[in-house]
Amino acid sequence: MSQRSIMPGFRPSLGFTVIYLSLVVLIPLSTLVFKSFELNWHDYVGIITNKRVLSSFRVSFSTALVAALIASFFGFITAWVLVRYSFIGKRFFHALIDFPFALPTAVAGIVLATIFQPSGFLGKLLIDTLGVQVAFKPLGIVMALIFISIPFVVRTVEPVLLEFESNMEEAASSLGATRLQVFCKIIFPNVFPALLTGFALAFARGVGEYGSVIFIAGNIPYISEIVPLLIVTKLEQYDEVGATAIALTMLVISFVLLLLINVLQLWVRKRSGQL
Amino acid sequence: MNAITQPINPAKLVARQQVALQDADWVRWSLIVIAVSFISLFICLPLGLVIFQAFSKGVVAYWSALSQADTLAAINLTLLTALVTVPLNTVFGVAAAWAITRFDFKGKSLLTTLIDLPFSVSPVISGLIFVLLFGAEGWFGEWLMAHDVKIIFAVPGIILATLFITFPFVARQLIPLMQEMGTQEEEAALSLGAGGWKTFWAVTVPNIKWALLYGVLLCNARAMGEFGAVSVVSGHIRGLTNTLPLHVEVNYNDYNIVGAFASASILAALAVVTLILKSALEWKQGNR
Image (cartoon, rainbow over all chains, first blue to last red):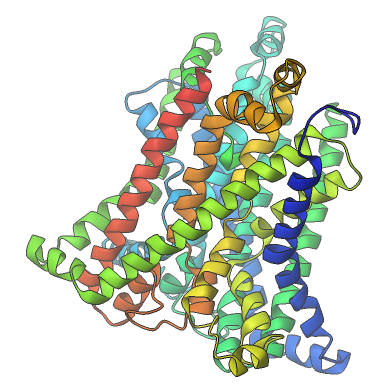
């Protein structure tokens, strides 16, 4: 593969790619940056430090974090069970994992709201037995985000568990390690970077998620209002500058967090000798 | 995102069990119970509920909800959106994969990263950027107004937002595969005198067809189901700019539960069909 290759079509394919990318993605995204130039620093700080805006950031990032953690825990167990054990209906469950990814978010939203609302099937059960209300609370947002996070975690961990060489395990156990030791010292460190990737994908998706959240959240300002909803609200009030300021801030925070997770991942890989 | 779109051959799952070191029975069974309960609670229950709610007032109510003019208009708009966006992003995906995997050039890894960009942008922001471009206050707002062209709160805006959201699907699927494939087969065909297009159709396409279909399938599912981005640019005009997912929202907010779930059941059916085809394509790719 070099520029001297006899392959045809370099100019047309690259030209089309770059032009199409610019028209559909880059130019539209750049409006975000240019629009923010209409703001001076003072106004920007004013918009972002508004109490309602700050609350929505707290709600969005904390619920996404909790949901990604829970989804990572159960997602790991699910991937483990799907790869290592056999049971009736396993293939069916394997195919179902992608359902949250394939199901339009609006549908997920109304379904979860119906299940968890105070009169709903699980909502009533949880109030009656534990006294916990899920819908119209941050907990409801967490539930919706767990739902959409599942495939991200399971599908990232599954291939790594599949490729994992069993001879390392065999060597460890033949040298007298217990199952728990083998898991903690051999298997988990090898799978951890993938789990971290799954967690990061789930978290990033959760922060920006809109459709599956707004129905169950109840969207009560200061309590269960997420950042994407606030952006929509600003737009409905024709406050494009305000919407842009919030959107840009959210994008920057998300990118910084993803960068940190990537650095952490690199560090983990180096430590476990995978690089 | 990349991880999700990577196919896993289910046959491998079977082979893996044979070499697995045995865990104690109680560990195995409790983990299976935890995983199955988790998936049942978060996936099987929602799936069951869509069907239950849609038919809760009987088949007749279900059918009349679906045959309303607004519902049919929403179905048409959803189909139109997918019909425009999927082919465009497919052509782009093939061209991008060809340029990236068949040639060396400066800025290649930057280009690959930029292609993934729409995946890391919130759907709402994906809608917002088109409002900033074409909205009344946007860059082209005045010009569009003067020439009486409507993009925001109209069909073109919905198509543009969907185009942005589904942009990476096909390219993401093809790039790793074509990288792994290498160029030998194509070079052989070219050196034997086949033309560029002939080589592409006779050598490249047969090699990438399953991955291509897989990408198209995921792209289509998202194009038909996108909610956040479309909701920002659509304006929710009944019978005109409501796609099926928006129609679900409007009905739900009007307490028309049967109507909402009837439309939702079509989208759920789309998701199920997508999953079945996806599993089938994973088998095909695994057996390649």
